[in-house]
Length: 125
Image (cartoon, rainbow, N blue to C red):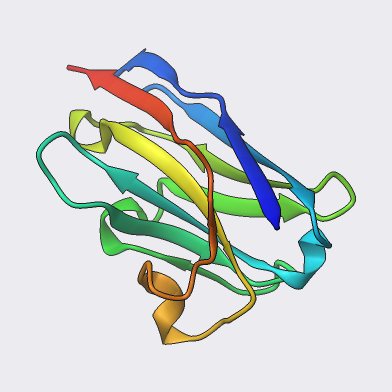
């Protein structure tokens, strides 16, 4: 089992920045690729970003490219999502997730075995 706990959400204004953290415990963190997903009110949960076990490869949904950065610190068992130039459309509950797989499917929920409880991000205009 892997336990994931997100933090760092909050209420900000458009153009502001936030950094989300996801702390992992349980099995060896470096064995898992990590992803961030989000769910806006009334919408399905969707992919935001993912990172390989070593952190050498990242992937982003087009709407956040150039604004968001995913990173990880395997020594601290933590994955981060740095979010810059936030927009009202970024308002959502953000979830981190862990998977032993990597590939094109890492942009979907299907391969992820473990999920956090989510953290709310609200961006006002």
